[in-house]
Structure formats: structure tokens, C-alpha cells
Image 1 (tube, rainbow, N blue to C red):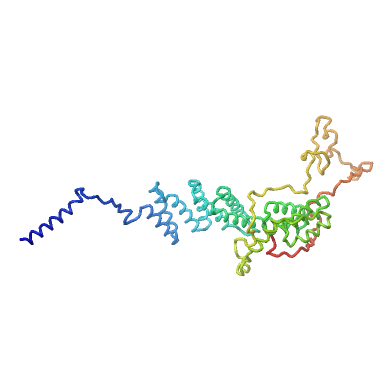
Image 2 (image 1 turned 180 degrees about the vertical axis):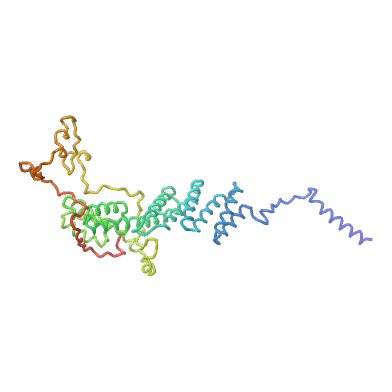
Length: 418
């Protein structure tokens, strides 16, 4: 009987213990959300699935999943990341269509989330999109100009971003390509003998892109073109040679530039220490292209960027067209007294005092039967006054074009070209 009573007592105590939590005698346990414990949030599940699809190359499936997340969970914390992932999927897919869609998605992301850190990353990706489509220096520069504009936007809108240093180097690489195309055109004009066109093209190139790897050679050709254009352009030639000595002191053209300045009896400036340090840094960090690139570079679509500068501030403005130095400027436009190659007669006064009324119209003079010789005046024509300077040079080559003698220039070393 005692054993039976003990068993019943134990069972009663056990039943009482099981009933006490429901009666509130003990503290209740915290409610456990099964969604956060055993599984993840549904928007996180969709985002992780899309990331795995992107990594495995299933871009279309990933975009469908991400659009489902955006349309279903409009307050999700993964909303911005999902929109950026859609752009990344297009970027990874590649191709002209995929890159165009990626650029549009990145721009939408910057528009909706301009203060997020990923906005600078999106702008950096846009710059990279156009860099991937750049052609060589002697081909179309549309993509290079677009890439230059987008990289400048990154430096302007996100100057303190961690992507800013990379954008500066990208901008130097892009401007190396643009300047290379301008240099090819200017050197072609120089070889052809069109010195006014060559001088104008090369002067604008150096003024806009001073970090160009062949800027010293461009200045040399510019100074030579001005020298061949006559004595009136001697100041421009002297300026070009002085710029080589001052801003590109380690160049192979510096010694020849000093010699020409001495022949012109012009001042030889001192080398700029900042320019010396920049050129020395570029020389030490120059990376020669590999043997594969040198051998098969002609088959590559993109340009060679190994010669681009590794230091210095890139140009933050676009190149502007300039008036060639060979184009005469009228006195009225200058606003100063004196005589130039062009004079302007506005016909002030009008009526009978106008120059159009005083001078007869040659078209109204009837022809004489004796021919053109009879139309000559009886008196000898007055000798025109001698011009104070040489006649303005012309790009047009009259007569049978001859072979332009190639000028012997200093041999240029690739590592000392800046």
C-alpha cells in the first residue's frame, strides 16, 4: 500500500508541475518567431537566390527574382541592393545591349539613392562601361569622350569617395587615348606640310592634356611648324621650345630645344622641380607591355594604356576649338589702334558718300572688242605698299605636290617620353 501511495503522489506532483506554467505561476518563455529561427526573411531569401543565380550566369532568372522582390516587398531593407544587383547582372552579361541596359540601371540607382555609398560605385561602373568600349587612338573617339565625361562626373559628385583615386587614373588613361588621336592628326599635318593646321592642332592638344605621354614631341612639332610659318610666328615657336625645357626637362627633346632657343637668341628657362618629380615618378612606375601584347596588339580592339601617366591632376574641362594663329585678327575686333592683315569697311555714312557708291562696279563695265588687254588702264598701276610682315601662311599646297622632307628628330625613349 505504501508503494502504491508513493507512486500516486509522484504522478500527482508531476501533473501539477505540468499545469503550473499555464496558470501563470512561472514566467512565460519569449515568443519565438519560426520565420527568423528556422528560416530567413522572404525578401532575404529572394535576394540570396538572385545572387547565386548571378554568380552562376543565370542573369535573366536573377533579374526576375529581383523584380519580384522589389514589387512585393516595397519596404524591404534589400530594395536598394536589389536594384543595384539588377544593374550588375546586365554589366556581367556584357555585350552592347547588356552594357547599355546596365548604364541605364546604374543611372536610375544614382537618381533614387544619391546619398548611398553605392552611388559612387555605380558611377564608377558607368565610367568602366565606356572604357570597355573604347577604340584605338586612330579610330572613333565617341566612347572615349563619354568615358571622360562620366569619370569627371564621379570626381565632381563624389570627390571623397573611395573610388575617386581609381577614377583619376581612369581619367588619365582615357585622356591618353584622346590626346593620342589628336597627336596623330597633328603629326600628319606636319608631315604633309600644312604647318598652320599642325600648329593649331598640337597647341590645343598640349594646352588641354599636359600629362600626355608624347606632349614633349607635340611641342617639338608645334615649334617646328611655327618656325616654318615665317618670322612673324617666332614668339610662338620660342614659347613651344621653352615649354619643353621647363615642363618636360627629362625629355629627349629638351637638349635640342635648348639649342634652338640659343639659335633664336631667346631665354632658356630653368626646369620646373614639380615637372622633374612627376616625370621621374612616371619613369620609375612605367610597366612595359608583355610580349603577348606587343605581338598581338594589332588584333586587340582596345587601346594600349601602358604609356599613360601615373601621377598629376587630369584635365577637368573639355577641349575647346581655338582660332589658328595664322588667321589674322581685324583691328575692330581687337579694339586697339594699328594695322593688321584685314581691314573692315562698314560703309559708314551711306548714300553718295558710301564706298559702294564711289567705286564703280567692275561687273557693269562692258567688254571691249580688243580683248582683255584693251581693258587695262592707260597709266601704270601704282605699286602696292609693302606689308610690314610676311604674308600669312596657307595650308593649301599649290602646284604639283612634292615630297616633304622628313625632319630628323631625336630618338625617343618610351620610358622618358613624359
